Length: 254
Image 1 (spheres, rainbow, N blue to C red):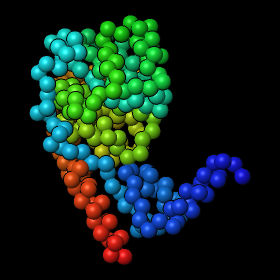
Image 2 (tube, rainbow, N blue to C red):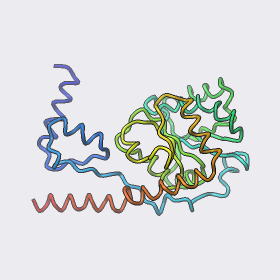
Image 3 (cartoon, helix red, strand yellow):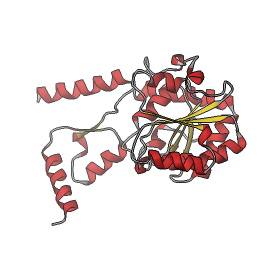
Image 4 (cartoon, rainbow, N blue to C red):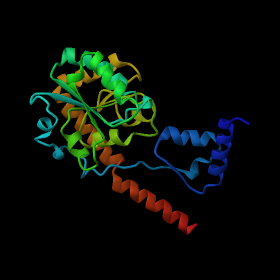
């Protein structure tokens, strides 16, 4: 028996005996159903975002000075770790296209990972290193300020479960977003309304979406407001935790 088949059987065995199953993405839910689990046993629960912590009012007036960015710069932020699955390489390759159209753009690349040295080298080889800040891991205390002080959020991931925590936090912070067409992203981001959903591993398409948002302040404002409302309605932390509490109560009552 192959390792993959053994793993599948083990997962199916555990799921079949579970009384209640939670997951954070519609795609994952459908996959669990395909493994033979009754739909009634599965509950969709998002990680949730505390919209009091993540909001546009957390903007830091000294943000650009701290990162040594030009005062008139427009900032694009990525929070995904620097691993192949998150394909931050596509953002680096999109940077020259964006800069050709909007030279005052600066890119904030957060997170760490095995690809950091490679991505820094790639930025140098493309001649865009001066426009990119690799800032490493951002503390939870600083994250709301980083998002609220940025202009556009980008996620280039090749795979997620539901909506990624960082994308939801960016939306709560009233940012327009550019995300790849994977997992549940289209369930959360309405293409052309809250941002753009682009094909994975397509730096040119990614660049064009970023340029549009950078060149259209009114669109950034409108899209950001739409995104915050979506998170408040569907992914508010307190509401998601109330759902978990109800599930526990139902289990205890049998």
